[in-house]
Length: 257
Image (cartoon, rainbow, N blue to C red; front, top):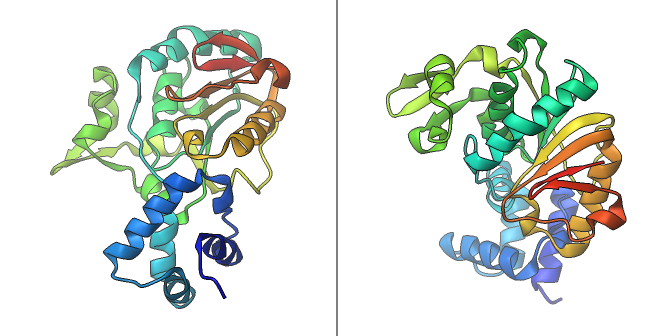
C-alpha cells in the first residue's frame, strides 16, 4: 500500500470528517510535513497510527491544521466601514434584533469585536452573536477570553478601558461581552448553515481553501443571508463570481444579498 498524502487525507477524513482535499494541497501538505518532521515521525502511516491512539495528539493536529490566526478589529479601516456604514444600514433595515454569525471564529477575537461594535447602537443585553469554529479546543480558548497585548491593539480605546482587565501580560475580556456570544462547533464544508442572517462575518479563512470549496461556501453564505443581509470577508479575499451567485458588492469586502 502507498502511504502518500492522498492516503493521509482519506484516513484523516475517517478520523475527523475534516476534508483536507478542500484545502490548497501544497500549503496544507507543507504544514503537515513540517509537523511530522517536528515530532520525528517517519511516514504518514505512522502518524495516522499515533492519531488513532492518542486523543490529545489528534486534538492538537486539528487545531494545528485548521489555522487559527486572529486579532481584535483586524484591519481597522474595514471595521470602521462596518461601524460607520454597514451596521447603521442594517439596524435601519432590520431593527434591533440583528441575527449575526461569526463563521470560523477562531479564538473569539472576531465575535467579541462584533459585540463591541454593536454596543455603540444598542445595550449589550440586546446583542447576540453566534460564533462557530471547527475546533472544540479553539472554542474552549475563545470562551475563556484571555488575550495577549498584540491581539487587542486594534480595539478602540474606549472599549479597551471598559471591557478588558489586565491580568499579568494578558487581557481578560469582560463577562458582559462574553455573555453576548453563543459558541458552537461547525465544519463549513459539511454541517448545516444558519438561516435568516442579517450579517455574516467570515474573514481571512477561505484563502486556505481550493477555489471549488470557496465558491461552494460563498453560495451557502448567500443562502444563509436574509434578503438585504451583508457578508463581510477578509482583506486577502474576494468573491470572483459574486454577480453570478447573486451578491451586490457594497464595498471592497462587503457584499449584500
